[in-house]
Length: 361
Image 1 (cartoon, rainbow, N blue to C red):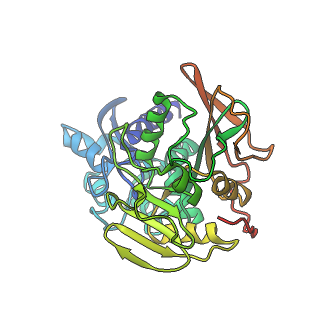
Image 2 (cartoon, rainbow, N blue to C red; image 1 turned 30 degrees about the horizontal axis):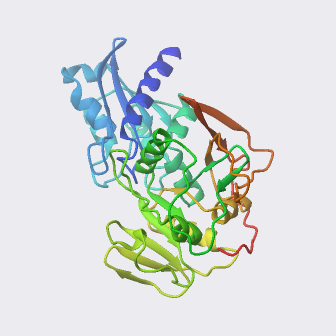
Image 3 (tube, helix red, strand yellow; image 1 turned 45 degrees about the horizontal axis):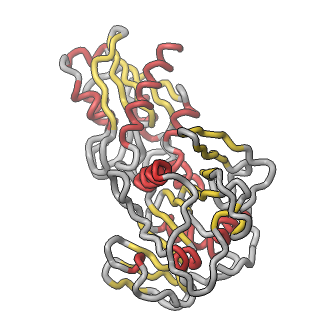
């Protein structure tokens, strides 16, 4: 029904307000409608806080009207005790006769059980209104629970002649080479607040000495991860400053020192697959890969990515480090910001191939 889609669209709009604040929970929006009028709405504001259904129901001034209302929610109501009580219990106590759900919840504790509980207690439930939009809203959450790995975003900036870095001489000062403007670098920091973790390779740590935190935006910094196979990177680099939780992927030791944790993972053809599995075990739902070229290309070659965000600069380097390459099947969508642009790519295959590669990282 057109009205159902209209109210579900409002649920999606509300849910987006929780971006970067609800993980590992999904973003959810809810709307209460009575007599063709919205009487209450809410969204999941933060992990551990009230769920969207609770916010929406509590915002209704005339609680008696709930018995003649419909509840719209972008994701199936939960039916288990977690940080909060089951939302299905509140819906049933409120005697709401009709519930419209955007999409079922893939989490094993829910996974259709919430819908079944509502129906078993006489509630009319409609499922699948704006389903694809509701799934896209929680692409991280769905990828994590369905593929048992984080949602993986690749990000890089390249020049007009397809280089991501200049040619560096041995012993050169470890500083980044900027291709984009300060405005787009601010956007990148905004993106960092939306993801659970960020990773770079050994060469990026040595050549750029990045901090991988959030400085040009307001929000939480992601878990910092970098590769250091033989633990040869000097202790004085920014990523070992103990200012933020950091993971060092290596093949020597497994330990925690202050806010720095060392994960021992073999640097073989299954390194990235095993790293993704380790992130899943640690409830890390999303990962943004910021470099360097070998690490990015390895994720691409193994099909272990979901989307890529590629900035296209106007300058020419002439020589240096070439940008990673895609297969022809991945079509980009251009986004213009001022006189600059970047491209969104989606992984056309959508799954990790499982094929071993032997790129040295």
